[in-house]
Length: 165
Image (tube, rainbow, N blue to C red):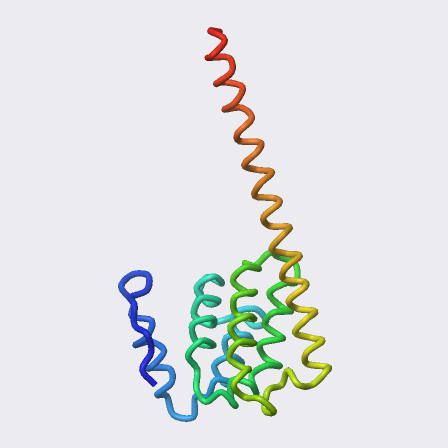
């Protein structure tokens, strides 16, 4: 399927890259998700790719991957990716949350074929979403505290300047 192009970073056409991956023989969404999960978080990879770049690729891939049934079959690997990414680091919880949201959104058209009809799968997705929301909140709080600490010296300098010191 033709993907939205829109050049990515460094002039890379994300749509063309996704079409290339989709055209590989026997390369299904479950295979791509499995490889991305394994090589980004659980096993060393021959090619070093920043995790945010990997997450951006995975989010875009989940957004456009066909067939949906294979994408649904990739849920266990995607779940493993979420869990591995959340262990011991903040690994971009907002990006992980975006991947989860996109996957859940793509499962809606499957109706009875959606893994989310299973109580176990729904519970796991809910648990991951809650953990990612907590991690996002923590990350935002830290960022706000750093901003406040940086603003205080500036505010003190502005007050001293206004007082004519």
